[in-house]
Structure formats: structure tokens, C-alpha cells
Length: 215
Image (cartoon, rainbow, N blue to C red; front, side):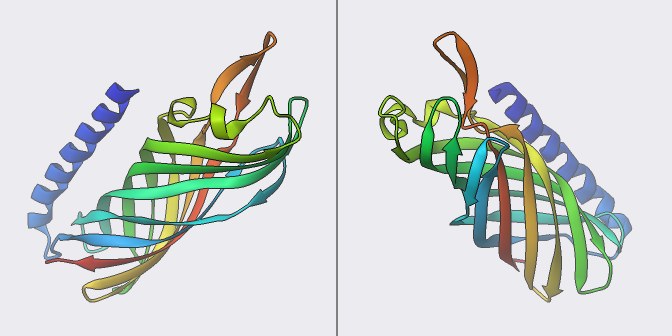
């Protein structure tokens, strides 16, 4: 998995160099800066009775590399919090568990400038898990997630799709984005000869962001 993440990073670097050279053919200048915002995250899954949103944050850097006046490629790299609080009621356990997950995330977005000050953007993302923990209230003491689940019990890589819109006001921009995870957060386990995945949810994050161009 680490090799996949490294390959993805190298590919992004190649894209950045390519479009940085291509921008010389256009009057639009590339932008580099910092960004951050508030996250509202949860885990979507079919085996959960109720999902509660966790509030977190994201903080990092971005580059907006123009292809034309109307289209740009925007890679980003930032720290972001994800997770959720889920009420489970299945064959193994009944209770409420909160999963707090911290990632380094790398999206590569295609940005379409609808007007000079308004854009829509979409693209894939890859994220690497830095840490993960769980807190739990359960009717079965055997499933004590707080003591039995740690970072190694979660999948290290998270892949998904991101889409949103933004408003550019000079060197300052504001945006709304939704990240839809395509990989399961938890790893597969075996319990009395039966395989199951816990947590079997996927990341879902709505974020409100602000960014500032440094050039």
C-alpha cells in the first residue's frame, strides 16, 4: 500500500511540473498558498442504525496550475480529521462507537472557472492514515473497542472522490467540498470462524474551507 501511495505522489508531482510548463502558453498565472477549514464527518454503512457527525478540521497547502483561462489543475496536501459516531446493532455487538481518524490527504482536482470569481471542482483523492482510535459504549464487554482497536486495526489508505465549488476574491478564496470515500475504514477480522469487517463504514466528509494565495 505504501508503494501505491508513493506512486500516486510521484504522478501528482509529474502533473504539477507538466502543467507549470504549459501555463506559459496562457496569461493566467499559477497560484500557491495555504488552506484550511472545518470538517463535518461521518461513516456511511448499511449495518448502522444511526450516524452522528463529528466536527474536525483540515489544514495544508495547495497549488492552482492553469491550463487555460477556464480550466486549472489543483493538487493539494493537507492534514485532515475524519471519522464518525455510529450506533451498531448486529449479530456481534450492540452499542455506540466513536471513531476518530487522522489522515494526510492528497487530492488532485480539475477546476472549471464558471466566471472570474466562481468555480466548480472535482477529482480523486488519496489519504494515508496517521492515527486512529475508538471510544465505545457496548452491551458486550468482549468488544471493548477502546482497548482492542488502535491505528493498526484501520486500513492505512483511503481513496475516494471529491467535488465542490469555490468563490475567489483576489488572493482569498472560500469553498465548500464533499469527500466520498470508496474504501472501507476497518480491516477484515475473524470471530469464531466467521469473517467480518469492523468498522465497515466508509468516510464521508463535508468541509468549509478558506485559502490564501502567497503569490
